[in-house]
Image: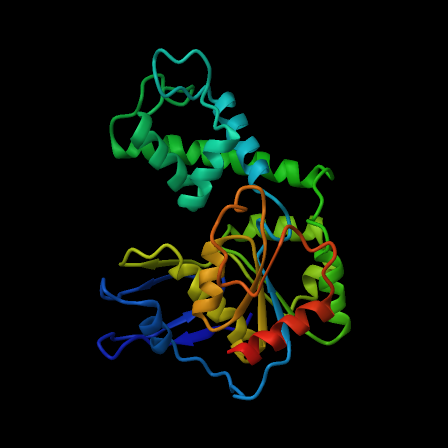
Length: 312
């Protein structure tokens, strides 16, 4: 697996060599912006100012290749029931996240453990079969979150492997059209690497998965600043560097405003294929917005990118 060297600012004493399984900590000032971050990343990609032809498609996984959030919610609720998780001594039933609440939660807080930690801080730490009484110290609270998350992850994998989950409409056809026409193809996700591999192997097939020109997942990037989409942004930069094409010749397919912001801030055009949980988000910077890709062909995306280049 090829690695990428990322020099930091002159005040930093070292660089980092990354693969998609590396934990990276950037020591950055709190006022660092997206634009200044991009300048600090050394990207060895030759850019043609006149280029506007589609050369690479970059797909997100969750929400784009599969509509996964209802599956995650199902797995969480089954985990809460399995461990009899109750956030109040007066609760008559185990915790259950309803659809409306989970849509709001997953659009505000990324990652399963952070979701649970936030929820328990807001609503009280629960009793469960893990601990009869709500944990009061950090060690106990970490254990209950880790235990629930591990069980939930295994249950989610079982659902994916059940054969009942289908890819979103049009995704497979677009991938095949892109490969047949010589375009480069990437799948990039902030989700756990093993989870994404499982999804891809079961939903697009092992042959298509192995034929990807770039696959990035499980890249945990920790910044000492508050920016909800900076990790997505840096991952997107890694993708087009690894593909070896100009950012202007890449088209990103996303389902959320966070992914859209990451793509546009990295200098790439983005089309949105929204889900029920992201449909109300502000996608004004997308070059096209679709409910799904069932009627979209590669030639449509090529024309969109050409028109976007002319408009800019």
